[in-house]
Length: 342
Image 1 (cartoon, rainbow, N blue to C red):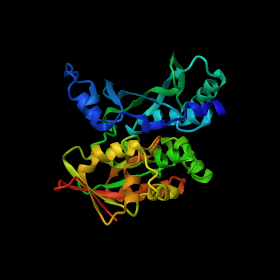
Image 2 (tube, one colour):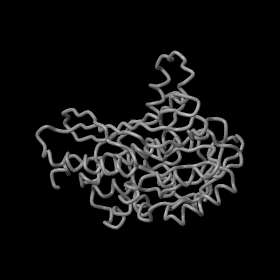
Image 3 (tube, rainbow, N blue to C red):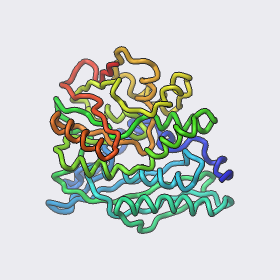
Image 4 (cartoon, rainbow, N blue to C red):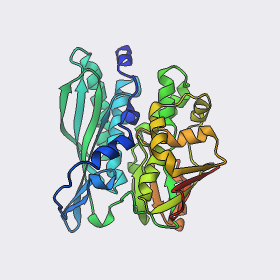
């Protein structure tokens, strides 16, 4: 739909506020009264909030919404929903219900909104959850997403900072979708590359998460707006370091060409500014650096687990068509938090 082009100016997780700005805001908020049943809150920098209801039941709460990053409204709805649902999987949870979050210009074609919501509803159904309602407001630009509720056993939560020395790091989707979506907006990405990016963004992390539950996962996050290195920084939690195998990180091939041509994103530069001080690159070219800082929308899971489990899990995921790769290892705390070797 040609009308959608006036709204597709730079959306997805690249539209998020920078990690540095968010950190400054959150650290100034007053401390809340302690509730022992709040197992994961905003002070944990984790993917979703977790509240314990009983010894073997906790609810997982998350929400995510953003402007379009693709021209097709139905596809945008799928991507936005898959991205919001991902936080439940990153916590080890199971999706139960979802609520629509809608911002839409009143003078725009209402059929566009219908297609967005149809795409979102289909992804909620694929997750096994139920779309239970939502909220909408008139706005100058389109924004869409979900508030999602899931459940998890309190003893089996995937926290992002639970990794251990000696763990291997497994990434379950290719990087580079931010670079490709940005280049597509200015007519510089091929249809093949955009199609591959869309397939990745519309794929639920449900399938990788289901396989991961067969193994002893120590830590997990999903890679979204802060980029691979930004979310890896959160996983280290100021207590561990890691080595990233720069030549093993999966990415969409055309993203390298785009980075080499300096078709890079403003959000990626925010990520570099915030996380770059924690990273040392050794024999790594500029394009690889940009891919590692690139903001992802509906990116893959980044999972920390023991070597034997990591090898078996990665092999099983590959058999199911998931492009999982072992991309690094966790070490004891070093002078630099993240070392990327080419």
